[in-house]
Length: 339
Image (cartoon, rainbow, N blue to C red; front, top):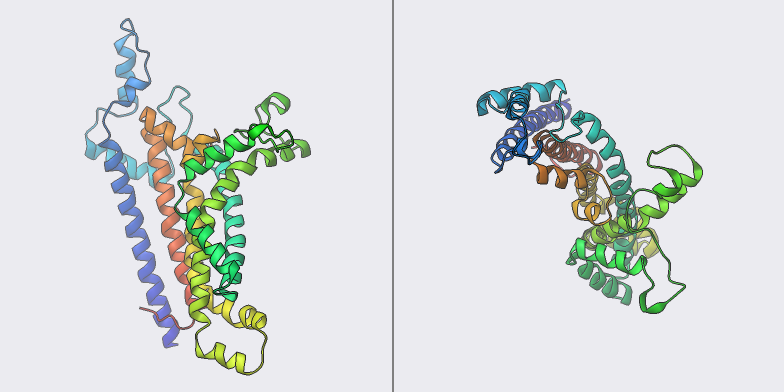
């Protein structure tokens, strides 16, 4: 009973912290974006001296840009709570929610695919490196992981794009992959529809950007998994299992892996949270119109409603992922005490 009460108290405190943190993110987001230099209206009207200034004044009044910062902040908070994120400042002037919903599904496809690849391959490489500690595979995989860990993602993306969209050194059999986009628009059109060949074509366009993200993030997962398992495999219960005559592979699978997972839970939670944030460099290089691509466009055009929405959902995703990771760690690792 005492344990349940302490867990409920901890849960209540964490939920309060989550609410306070999200409110702080929203406030800081509003202030930082409205401190950006420039006037978004200048990007919405033609650069023509004969342009009617009354239209510009109408746009300023429509978007409440003449209101004080305090009034804009209150409207921003109220609309955020209601789920009304306004319309984009750009010429299309579509609803922000519709724009982000469209972009988010493509980002989740790209970053979600690469995250699954990263977690599965990284955990397997890290576990086997710990199992073969000091061996050729351990040394080699650690060296390669550290190389990719320090490698700029945008550089690797450009390198892959150059290698697989041309015939390097005149090699005619070298595989050719699309340099960017979602699918072949000339063949299938610009609107998505459920078709086997279209989905197969999308997979071909997804290879390079998802591989770039997966390899760029693989190092952190494999190194953390290796370090976690090496720490676990020096514990007394592992020595006892060896003394009982269990095989090393069984010790690794049944005893070491379950107890080495807690550090991975937090890392996996963060990786999942960053799915919402997008992959800015990769999406720009591969012309993949997801959240990251939309963010860069919004910064260039001072599209405040788009920027506010993207920053808020990215911050909320990280906070919620941290909260869920804390709850999972409490159940997975009984050694964790409730503070």
